[in-house]
Amino acid sequence: MNARADIAPGRRESFACPIRDVLDRIGDAWSLLVMLELSKGPCRFNALSRVIDGISRRMLTVTLRHLERDGLVSRTVLPTSPPQVEYALTPLGHSLQDAIVTLRDWAIEHQPVINDARRSYDADTDAG
Amino acid sequence: MNARADIAPGRRESFACPIRDVLDRIGDAWSLLVMLELSKGPCRFNALSRVIDGISRRMLTVTLRHLERDGLVSRTVLPTSPPQVEYALTPLGHSLQDAIVTLRDWAIEHQPVINDARRSYDADTDAG
DNA sequence: CCCCTATGGTTACTTTCGATAACCTGGGAT
DNA sequence: ATCCCAGGTTATCGAAAGTAACCATAGGGG
Image (tube, rainbow over all chains, first blue to last red):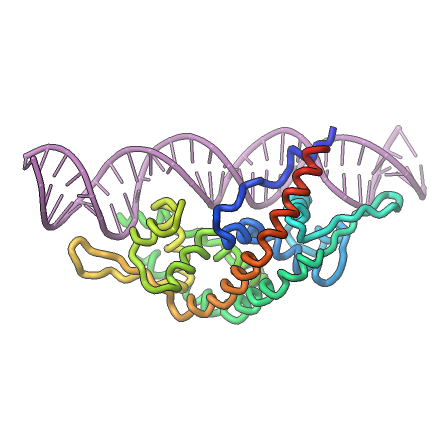
């Protein structure tokens, strides 16, 4: 029996709201990191799990399934021994790179300001 | 006693990864919707909860606290009776709008393709 | 007076999800 | 047979999302 159904990606359907929809897709924190890695070129499962610091095998599996389901990433089994599985961005996946890069650039630029805001909020809250 | 601590935003600290960091911030699906609403202008709590379909009072509170903590949204109590609370984007919040809009535009443009990909993936998976 | 509306939340509780560690299958080397 | 690697899957737990109900205040209707 194919056990993949047990781990199948959530099938929450759109909410008449495309932003929510795309966020449900890439907002899970690992998806973006995986896509950023794959934007450098195709990569195998364990290679991804080594290079994406902190991700577990399970979350990598789940994340890749999500991305595969949404057509952002392709999965190719290579006829080697033992078989290797190569993941790569699809054209659709590449088309998302611009948005991701915009987001990343904003994040990098404003990280210090945000951290300051957080510290001052936490200080006020803890004190008050 | 100030009960706000009980509902305080998570204080997960950065991971040496700005993209993860920004995604932890705005990736929770409600944050983006709240910011998109506030980008139209300041708004009060209950007005937000009415216009953002599906959000509960609690999640709106939590989301607004997160955004406030990160300096993306400001909170102003108006001296009316009963007191009203107005939320608005800060300049930092406005600076994120470009990235959000890029993301939203991508989402709107590619939603049909993604839905097709999902349907065909689901069909294949269900068929076995 | 009580009941209903509205304001902006909070509290307790349930359900769902993210994440970790451990396990599995199968081939090759020793 | 035993150990490794590949690429996952399973069981489990804690945190987070979400729901329903409550609080305090003020105004209007019966």
